[in-house]
Amino acid sequence: MEAEVDGDDAFLYEGKKSAILCIDKNEIQGTTREERLRKDRLRKRLSKEKFQKELNELHRMSVALEYQLNNVKNRRNIDSSKYKEYAEIEKARLQQAYCMNKALYQELILQMEKAVLLKSICPPASDFMMIIDPRRDPWALHTLSKNPQQQAQVLHNLAMYQWSKITPELYGKMPSSVNHPGYNIVLDDTGEHVSFAEMTKFGTFAASHEDVAHALHRYCLSASNNKHVTPVDNSLALTVFLDKQRHYVVNLIRESPDRMILTHRTLVYDDMQGQMAQESIAGWWVFERLPSSDNTIPMSVMRCFAQINIDVNKEMNVQAYTTHMINSGRENELMNQVLSQFPILSLR
Image (cartoon, rainbow, N blue to C red; front, side, top):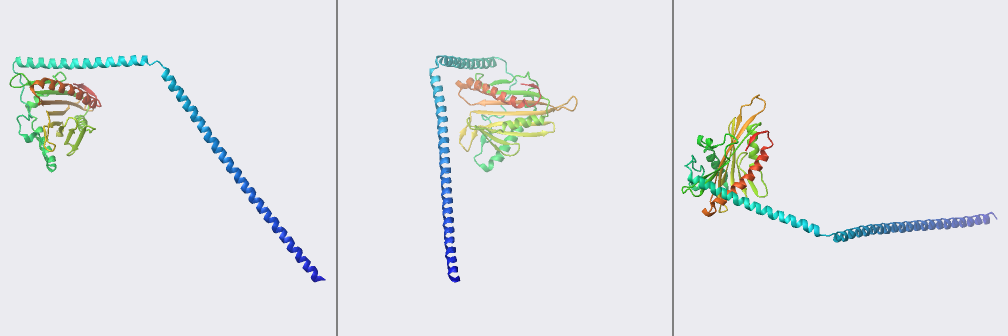
């Protein structure tokens, strides 16, 4: 009888166990279903939010485009006649300025022709020959060597040759005040055409003569889109103006503790490119220390003398020198801007 009871208990135990397993399985299935439903609701909500965000963005874009369209329509409705009137006024002013500029240029040419005429009838002045003259000098003194290995030495020799030309006679041609004439023309042997021109510049500063010299030296060696600079050393360099095909040899020399000299000159012939230059320019800048009244503020003086020859037909002689004088005036303004960094006592 006891064995039968034990068998019944085992049967009941197995039944309970099966029931529990079924319940657990149903609970797991229910949990999985709820999780799936929760994820589905989350997906739908995110999708709805994304759709609403895109809809709002399209609405804002529509409003912005409509606003731009209204602005365009309003601009089209504005009477353009007044703008046309302004354009015509500016066009007339531009034409007037062009005519005035042309008239002033013709007036300058006329004044230059008068100067040549007066020079020809006046007694000979104390003009001396052009110091560095491609019409008279050996060709090598005005040529850029085509051998790159020799260029540095050639440029150094050319710079030293120009420096050696600073004689008492040349120094006497340099200005001693701002009242010195800034431009002078020298006629050829016929007395009918300009052989070369002379330019001077003068200034005094409450600044070190070395600082002023280095400032202009840096300006001469400042590169740009149309200006290529090839340094040889800290003082000597070759600058090439690409638009004008003009080659400059620039050099700065500390001649003594109280004097610095800046030289610049053009090269007439480029042996590498086979190009000729119309202009031959040579300039000497002397920067000297001046006595200081209180020995605290440095004082200095700047003197410049330059000569220019332009190789053109005699019919274009006066026009060429007039144009050069105008361009030199513009260049002078740029140099004055560089010098304005120092306290200027006098400048021309």
